[in-house]
Image 1 (tube, rainbow, N blue to C red):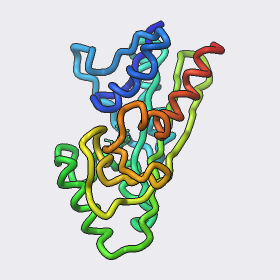
Image 2: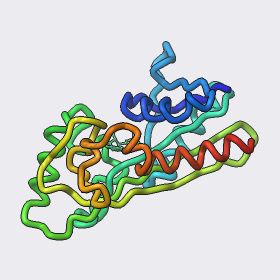
Image 3: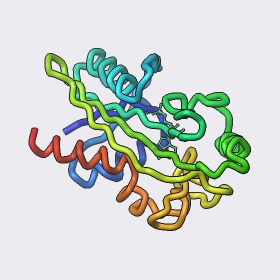
Image 4: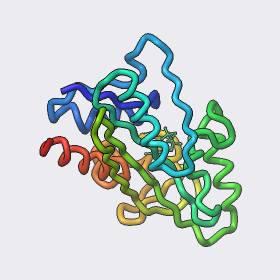
Length: 193
Ligand code: IMP
């Protein structure tokens, strides 16, 4: 069965493929379309954005569309960057710079709790949308470490394993991550469809 992931983020698409292709799904993404597909993320929550993305692809291509919206919430920064995680400081700004800025804002701050959140929306024509929301709790590290993963992973410290997300192997991250948990919910749902 073909699933279209309504995303152009290579890091995220890779994680979806790793988790869904072994189960026999043909995973495509917005990178596989010749035409430019631009979807405005106008929602104020991860849920709203996941729904907006999946709905626009389902309506346009008449397929089952799956979209995720995810991001980093830092408690001391009132949940920022949140739904603006990829746009924060500019969409094209390298994460080395974004991560250094987070570390600067958190300098001397003891309350470093944060979480990654992932919402996955499944939208099919003429059916009610389904949305799964999952998260993983962590702390903003004192310094950036590791070079796996993507985005904020080098500064996302995961206390139970004593390392950052960027120091984890792919399987390790997928086993505990917000996206890993939400994708497992999606897999269960797909199996019963
Ligand atoms: P989206 O593509 O609009 O859902 O934005 C997701 C953004 O949240 C990414 O571009 C990253 O900035 C951040 N993010 C979400 N999940 C992860 C992750 O697993 N690792 C690192 N950053 C993440």
